[in-house]
Length: 221
Image (cartoon, rainbow, N blue to C red):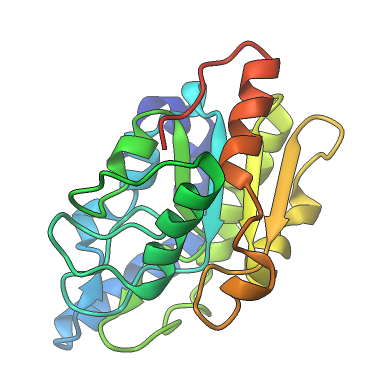
């Protein structure tokens, strides 16, 4: 049985019996046997779901796939493990928090687990990557699974904030019921696009304003 939080497993159990998921498992096992390094560690592949239960999700931040550099890859979108030098996109996310909330970040490390524990689902659409090879697992059917997650949240829950940065995340907008949920869109926080439409998007304060409006606890960003 897959190591998956029961709140998700009750809805996603059948996905693990389908051919595409069996193909993913076979592919990953073959790659590892051939000596390739896969991120994150296979035991942590589903930890975004294990950290943020289905019942408690309030916000979804969607991204493409894990970082591919050694020690950076995490199972949470945009996050890195403690004490790891952050990539530029993650630095820009915290710059925007400072811009938006008018406070200096007191961050000690760049691990976003604290957000996940406040019920922010930090979901990569593609859950694995080969070391040093960006987007290398973009064709191995992970998106069938993660699209089901997005549709599940959209169908079964209400008033979820979906934060979609850049075109890839925004391509998933058609999976979300706009009449039930609050969608925020902007450019990617990468240095190549952050000054065009990411900085001053104010997604962090807008999220909290929406949560406050529906009587839910705000996120401590």
